[in-house]
Length: 454
Image (cartoon, rainbow, N blue to C red; front, side, top):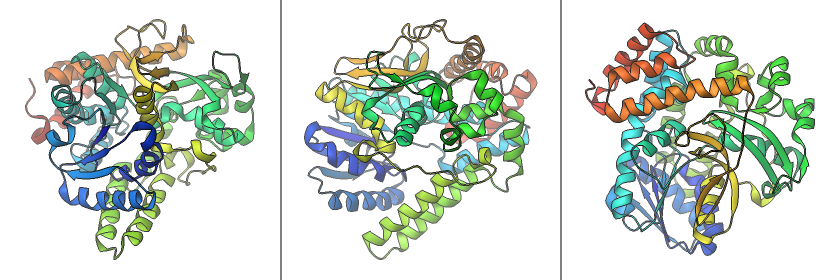
């Protein structure tokens, strides 16, 4: 098997390497190609990957390249994790949103649309190239934000073998696994919604087929569990009302004004913070005298970056880090590599993914990309049947999905009118004149990447 990572110069790429080594024999993994269009960054991150591969006894060949065609040629599986406009683009998106008095975040609301303007066309080009010169029946696993909206656009463009992946889709599964000290493979959760807008209504231990021990209601009433997870950032009354494990990004909707005030009070946006940390990491990697020293730098800076993630929801404090659960905890790598293993070896896997609804959630169209628990094997992806969901959740999901449909078509058609309509219906914006100002500001700011829209 040949596996290609588009965006291989990402600072998160090294996290894949130990997991790939552990799975290599089962996957018959022969080559791993890291492709990136920033050669200096690729060289530094690729060096870390080389070190990790050697330390873990990798048998596969690791190839670094800036040539997308050679990277994708004959690849059976392609992971896409890119950032058009780099960290500077994200920081600009957030500042523009704040200047207009709305939340700035790279996957939600105005900032999410601005990110999608750049990321969807780029991922679509790679997807079409994969269909042209990749291995027969090659699959794409997209991490590029906003994952759900990008997947919606790819689906509209006729790309079928693509799976949208986001760590937060399996947040409840991981939280229960860590809290109870139970391997992930024994924990079955029922998640439904959209990317960064999802709820988990059930978590069962050994619950394949819905016959396991239900543990979520008890944990949601357990103060220790709540305080050890992001659930502590939600108001107690809201937690009681929802009765589910909430995706942490729902904080932007259910605590909108509080979140906006907290973000505006910070001296730098999250994008500016990430830009600073990434620049600091690359400088230190370049100055490191040995591969081991470089790896130590990477672990330290990435730990700092992870600890401050969504710190505004915790009053600026660092995240609580629970211990991992034995060999099942692979973090960033787990979902994508689990899907690859399921398809390559026909070993069924159960996980939360962003895929076409196909009758899973009542009231949503079959071609709507939703975030839902799925079974995956060589035959593809099968979302579980969720059925009807509570009306307050459904109405929010429906409104955001209307935005995603319009936004995806606006980007594919380069239509300013559709873009304004999309932001107007978004619950975090809801104003036509404001939507016009935001669209014009983003088109002007990113004209070099997105071109002219009509």
